Length: 229
Image (cartoon, rainbow, N blue to C red; front, side):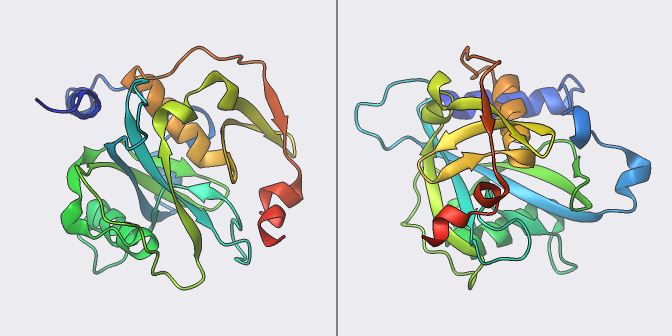
């Protein structure tokens, strides 16, 4: 019998194919005219059965994230899904997502079962049109990032912990608001926070949380200054 979370993911993609998926709105909503001027990229939301012993809280799966190096010029210290720009040599968004994931986490593409892609979304702040790709891995080897200097470390995070009401807040930075998920090494926020918030909601995984809760983020925190200490 397939893992319950895998069934949920496949059901979500079926809704995409049937035109019943609710696309991400707000600043990341797709716009054909604007997207034509943006660079194309892809990210991989790679799920795997949970490994926390005794953790039975649904959906009982882990998600792989990467924490960018605080020494980078762009988006230093941020926590994101593995991914990056689509190169001419890539087999479209799925090929780019697999390549970038292997470079950033060390998880080879043969470990990943590609499930499908979600509709394109935009990241206006960096002028990227991003295709989110969903993947599944029954088992994965230890992660070993191979992108020199780009990734500080890989995070394997139980989704149930991300969805814990105590880990949720709206992150406020310079007048901008985004969905936030607290993890031990910081916050998942911005584009990644908004994308995951929408994905979990569409999967039916979101748990009730205090939607008035706010985390006031400083620029030092946003740039990963605490990671240099």
